[in-house]
Length: 148
Image 1: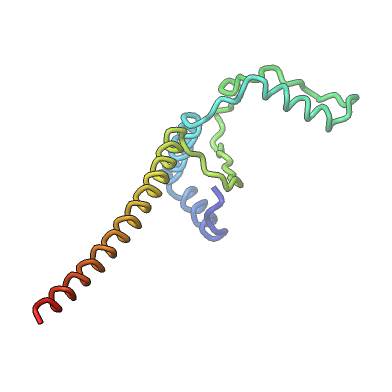
Image 2 (image 1 turned 180 degrees about the vertical axis):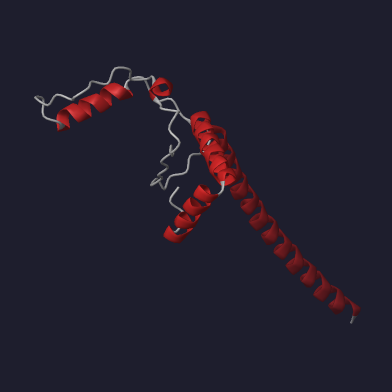
C-alpha cells in the first residue's frame, strides 16, 4: 500500500518466494482488503458516468477512436480477472476532508449550544456568588460594629 520502505518490500518479496505460507497470507490479505473495499464502496449517482464521458469527450479530440470500446459500464465484477496471482488494490487518499454522518452534525451542534448555555450559567452563578460574598462581608462588618 506504499507504506513500506524499499528494503522492507525486498525482504517481503524474498520471504514470499521462500515461504509459501507468506505468499498465501499475502493473497488472503489482498482478498480481504478487496472485500472491505467492495463493502465500503459507495455507488455513484446515475448521471455521473455521462458527466465523465462528456468531460473526456471535451478533452480527447472527436476524431479519436479507441481500439476497443468499453462494452459494459457497470459490470465491474465480470471484468475483473481473479486468476492472476499479482492483483493489488491501489489505495490513494489525497482528501483532507473528514466525512461525518448526518446525525453527528446535529449532535455536535447540540453540544455547542449546550456549551454556550452552561458557560452563560457559570458566569451568572459566579457573579451571583461574588455578590453574595460581598454582602456577607458587609454583614460581618456591620456585626462587628454592633458588638463594639
